[in-house]
Image 1 (cartoon, rainbow, N blue to C red):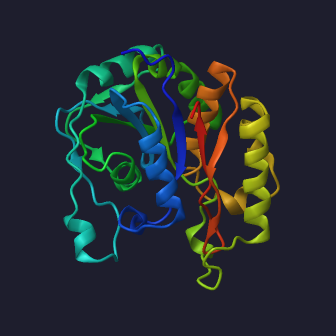
Image 2 (image 1 turned 180 degrees about the vertical axis):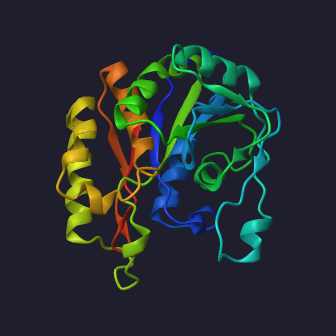
Length: 261
């Protein structure tokens, strides 16, 4: 494959409804998928596989996981039948060494943090997908370093796709703020943007000390995926670009970033 460096992305995925809606966020995701070279495979890092281990899906046919509740029946009937790539799973484990990455044969699959985005990027579900868990027992510095170690995949035609939300506080959702953010959400999102587009990876780790961090990141599952993009950027001495930005319901940032696109 004569791709010098495959782009990479962090997508602010928001609600599962985005899998089925056409809006300015999903339009940007779809345009990104159409604009990049066709990847050999996707390594997805989703907020929704947040466990006390580092693992990678290694099955040939990952199942579609419907990890949400309270949505219409058609959401639960949706399938994203992309094949897996056991060879890529083994390569991820090798690149991460000495960090241990377990090869998951049957416990996970593709959750909605992955397929809600890939349904727009590659609607035919014909690009192989491997998913990497987020180790809940490890600090931000661990995830940044692991992201850095994955950088060689971009030279092998692999699209590294992180999926979460930099600001994600479901306990403070405000329906009256459909497309607006609270002031504290905007402050934190803008601080993250300044670092990803014009700062250093170490500064991104230090965002844990930002005065709005606890309110914006009550749990780190949706925030940690952005550290993988920061790690990839550091490895390549690149700066991220904003793909699309905005807010939902006051306390969700929908900002997405790309590298090399």
